[in-house]
Image (spheres, rainbow, N blue to C red):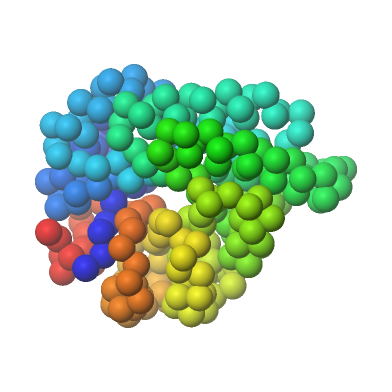
Amino acid sequence: MPNFAANLTLLFNEHPFLDRFEQAARAGFRGVEFLFPYEHAKEAIHERLVRHELTLALHNLPAGDWAAGERGIAVLAERRQEFREGVARAVDYAGTLGCRQINCLAGISPEGVERARLHDTLRENLAFAAGELKKAGIRLLIEPINTRDIPGFFLTNTAQAVALIEEVGSDNLFVQYDAYHMQIMEGDLARTIQENLPRIAHIQLADNPGRHEPGTGEINYPFLFRHLDAIGYRGWIGCEYRPATTTSDGLDWFAPYRD
């Protein structure tokens, strides 16, 4: 049976962030994830994880000025030092929070910069981060994202991510496969996941269109969950969707998988 982690950046937004841990546990989740922990003291987050017996499945490296529209800095050569400082900060948080996976958002391609230069910068930054995280016993992930929601995002499909992993040459670099993003960019979800399963360390879900809960769109999630079991996927599935109404009112899809 799949292991589901509630994404606390998007779910239970009716409550302050630190109160969402309790709501996730009450709903039956045994894991959580979120975009970034850095606005909160790591000790405060750790206390909520322990109190509610939750595992932190994933968080992201610092990704620049999110409020200003930045979605990662790993492709930006002039931000290399900031990226490295972010790796150290993420490892520090993950160590306290018991998080064994950190995702790297590549970033948006700036105008006027050759794609080859962006690729080389990303490759070098990933090699550095994968090495630093490996020392701490943490896996580094990279996530392809659709260009409808984030125009100009550099990493956009599974084949590109796998090729980049092979080029970096680290055994500590994996794919975070977001079914919502990849339904938009490439489709063929079940086959793609199966063919790339050794490279995939984390999966996320939302339905399409709308990015709402499973059952609101075109993706056949009951089939996909059975397929993941059948092919032997044992990682977390992060529920990174925007509830159509409230989180609790939209959890009918989750009922067959609780506990």
